[in-house]
Length: 144
Image 1 (spheres, rainbow, N blue to C red):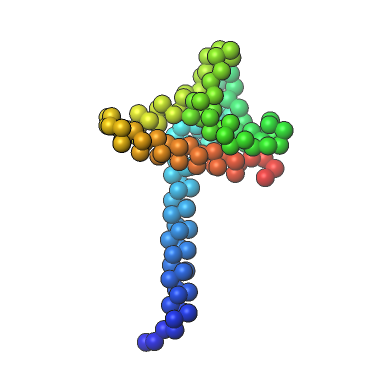
Image 2 (tube, rainbow, N blue to C red):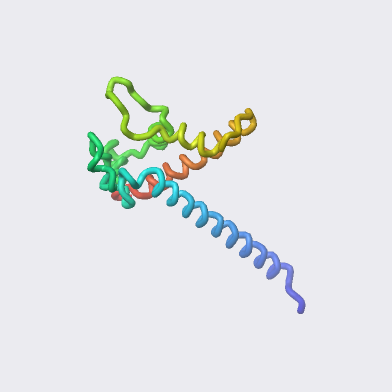
């Protein structure tokens, strides 16, 4: 069987595209799993602030589908990232009921490893996971 060069090239491009798309789908599933594991207990599986633990909190968790709406129509990735990771923790607002996920994720990612190389690799992985959560939340915004 003789396959033309253009047909062969097309087949390779198609295969690579399929692999790339499969990797993206896997990433989306991992991000959804992170959301369900880290956020849904308080914010709900639908991100609307109605999770099973919400009734036990002193402050109602915000509806994460309306971040953009509450920010005058602008979704600020950096602000959302900083809040999740724990970089935005103003002391004048009292206690913060939301866990500082950056610390928690670092502990989980290092799994007892304490080398500088392990910490650097963990930091990159955490940044990637949290940015995926930020993108996930951005996609959930009402009116998008």
